[in-house]
Amino acid sequence: MRQRGRLAAKSVIHCSANRNDIVAAIQDGISQAYKTNNEAIVNPYGSGDASGQIIKMLKEYKGNIFKSFYDLEIKGDK
Image 1: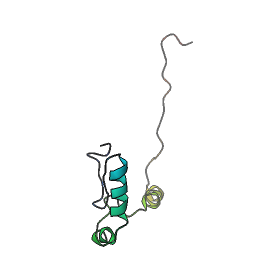
Image 2: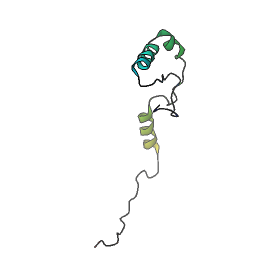
Image 3: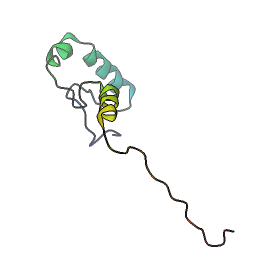
Image 4: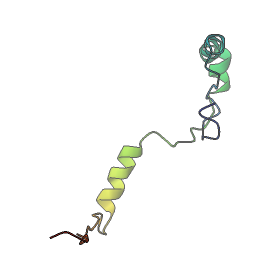
């Protein structure tokens, strides 16, 4: 299973890559019981506004956000 060990919300439905399991997972996902059971689940990835939060942090940051690069001499270069 490709996603094993990865962070996932409790609302994520895992299934194997065969037709019957995929159909069963879709049926579970569209069921009223699934929707009811997942109303109070907390999203482990945050509020969904990552780009807005990053922009705000960059605007408020007072330090240097640019990386310095240095040219290196390579043996044999002229």
